[in-house]
Image 1 (tube, rainbow, N blue to C red):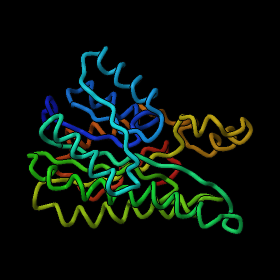
Image 2 (image 1 turned 90 degrees about the vertical axis):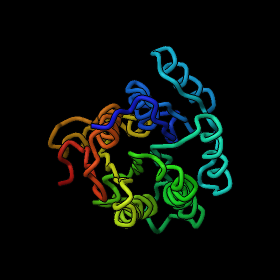
Image 3 (image 1 turned 90 degrees about the horizontal axis):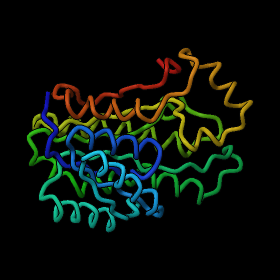
Image 4 (image 1 turned 180 degrees about the vertical axis):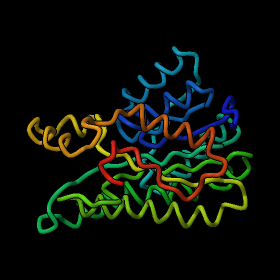
Length: 247
């Protein structure tokens, strides 16, 4: 078990949903967390406030991580603030769901840029610092859609599948250094995105999940904590947290 007190983490897309839950879980276990957000500073500040009220340490940092220059600045801000970086959680993501016949070039490019290219941008900016850690961790939040596909989600599925391939290849390259690289593939999680689905469709989805419920953001966050704290010998893997929907 790795002691997490004093470790430093960046969580991209950390102001809401799964990202916010990850930030709070890490902070509750002694990690200093940089909560990255793109536009919603109020939500990010609220997460920071909640962490601080619970006795943790965090700060919010604005950056569009789909832009390589902004990703580099985010890492620089983290190093200037805390002097090191141990954990990178690549969580930023968007959807532009349409059937393939209706999908536009912008729909495709935006999802690939935010969901997949941001992983490259952040990892390449952060890697030298993470490798200086004695317990470096890179955790990519992929999706069940990257494994099984999703109707009307060719762009999202391609990006999330790309994250899995990226994870496996980088894990091979970094294994000797002690830095682990893993993906977490959530199923349907009770976030704003799922809550926006019409009730009848939600009921149909739940009926297909063996566990007969949606997952909670906190369950994904505990998966991240496990990989950070207990995952010294786990690398290149997909941690499936999906209630049995995909096996």
